[in-house]
Length: 288
Image (tube, rainbow, N blue to C red):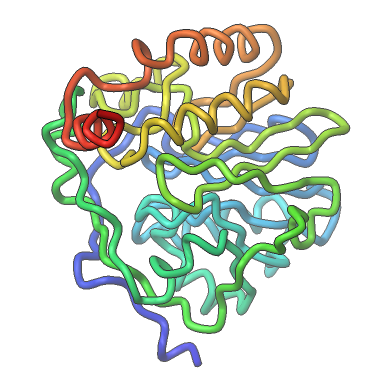
C-alpha cells in the first residue's frame, strides 16, 4: 500500500525561511509549536506521556526535522497516534509521505480536502497578482498538484470529534481551502487555527522572515473565497480563545489575542481582504 503514496509532479523544496525556523515553543504543557521554515507544526500531548498527535506535516523535505522534534519531546522512537491536517496545502503536507512511511500512522482531514489528498484534484493556482509583497509574487512556484495518501487518509468524524484528542473538537473554517478546519478545546479555550487567520503578514517576505507579530487573515495568494474566510474568522472570534497557534507566525495569547481577533473581525475588509486580485474580483462578481 505504501508504494501507492505519491506527491504531485510539482512537488519540490521551496527556498523560503524565517528567523523562527527551527524554534519550538511550549505554548501549554501539552501544546508544542515548532516552526519549519515559514510554517508551524503542532504536537499535542504532554511531554511525559507516550501518546501524542501531530497537527500538520510541514514543508517539503522536512521529515527528518519533524521526527527529530517529536523524539526530542516524547522520547526516542516515539510516534504519534495520528497526523491530523488543518488542510492540504503544500506547506502543511510537505513531508507527510515520509512521516507515514516512518511511523505507519493514519491521517485525518476534512471530507472536502479528500480530493486534494487522494490524487483526484489540484488546488486552484495561487494568485500572483494579489495585493501583497514578494511571497505573493513567488507563489507561482508553490506546489498545487494533488498528493495521494491512499488508504492512509480518512475523513474526520462527522460529529466534530477529533481522533485521539477527546477534549478537542474540529470546526469547519473554509475560505482558505474548502475543507479547512481548526481545533478547539473548551476547558482552557486553546485554539489551533491553521490558516483561518495567522499572526504574520504572510504575503510580505520581510515580515515572514522576521516573523513580526501582527494579526492577519488567511494567506492571500491561496485564499479563494473571502466571504467564507470572514465567516470562519467570525466563528473563531466568538469562541474567545485564550491562546492560538496559527499556521504561520508566533502563537498569540490573552488580551492581545482577543483584541486582535476582534479588530480583525471588525476591520476584515481592510486588514485581510486584498484591494485587488483574481479571487477578490471573482467574489465581487458573484455578489453582483
